[in-house]
Amino acid sequence: MPGRFITVEGPDGSGKTTLIQGLLARLEAHLLPDLVATREPGGEPLAEKIRDLILDPAHTDLDARAEALLYAASRRQHLVHKIQPALAAGKWVVCDRFVDSSIAYQAWGREIGVAGIQAINDFATEGQAPDLTLYLDLSAEEGIRRIQTQRSDEYNRLDQESIAFHKRVVAGYQELLAKDQGQRIKAIDASQAPEACLDQAWKILQAAYPEDFRQD
Image 1 (cartoon, rainbow, N blue to C red):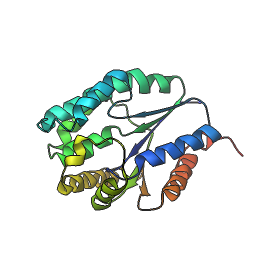
Image 2 (image 1 turned 90 degrees about the horizontal axis):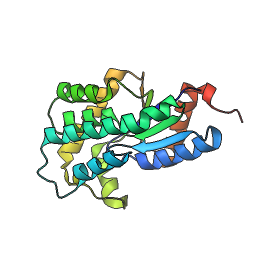
Image 3 (image 1 turned 90 degrees about the vertical axis):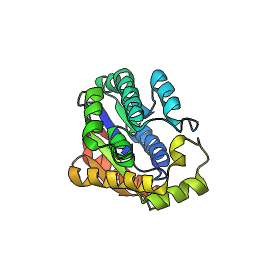
Image 4 (image 1 turned 180 degrees about the horizontal axis):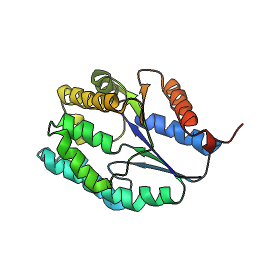
């Protein structure tokens, strides 16, 4: 069975962590033991150190282009040392964020241009792209509301950004979605209850890769 590279994308507060946890539980129960769950930035020891630099709330003066380059460096390390070996071994890789996040957050959120961000990520990934992306579609306003009222995990530098920044991020994702036309990126209405989002994501995976799932 070939490896599958699945990414989960969405604005802050869209429920990626909850969705991924649910998917992993179902995949482990219905599919395979050869499953790798990972995240960006991070997912590999050196890449995690870069993550700490990027997201440290104290680094308020981090230049936007320097930030973009750090994300790309982390991605390269993660890709070469974790994602690609797992795929070569025939494993499924479920990754929280990939290049789409850099387009949305750096190109659009930071307003430094899609072409440059695409170029440094093409260099970092050598064209490696996800096989399928689950995009949790949620407004910036609702995402921020959820973060402020529900989230209890790490507080990071992006939590300090304005609503205008997060609206640009969502606009960037919508542009990616429009250009893709549903070929790779599958949108899920993240305003639904978490279980409904999980059910929709599960159906998308089963439809995309029916040969990989055991029949009950």
